[in-house]
Image (cartoon, rainbow, N blue to C red; front, top):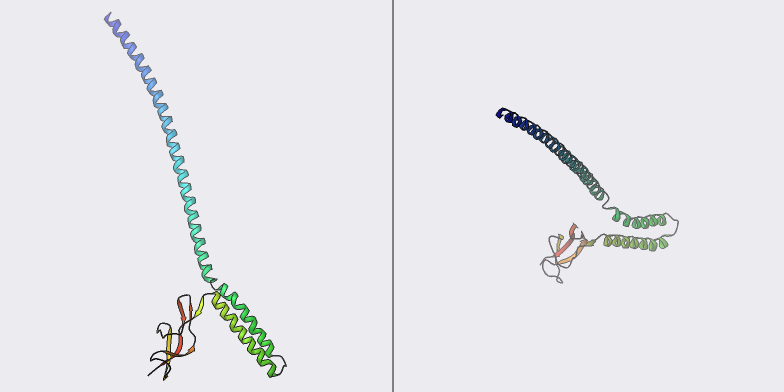
Length: 187
């Protein structure tokens, strides 16, 4: 009877072991499928992130190239506004040349030429003002803005003061384009 009990117990143990092994295999298969799904999801998210990164990087590079191109275009065409402003001056000079080619007597031409030169100068000054170009002030001598090319005696001026502006100086905003050539008083 002991042997029979032993066989029954052994048979029950084998049955339970089989059931446990089947359950374990089922759980293991379920876990494996679940993990494969999670791995697949993680791989998909990684691929999406990589794609987003590559697109963003490509967009960034394209923007960088476009900005570089626009920067060089801005440099190339920076003087466009100033050039357009000078067109009126060219028109005035061309009209003066046409007037000079007429058969009118000199006493009639001279006032027209003077008027044309004055209009040309007015157009140039207007263009300069629109583009922030101004004359260098000549009140007091400043070696950074004036070039003393002559020294003259003058009782009306103090020593080192500007007596006469021989050629105007110009600056663009705060940057000196050309110093004014002046004569200064020497005592």
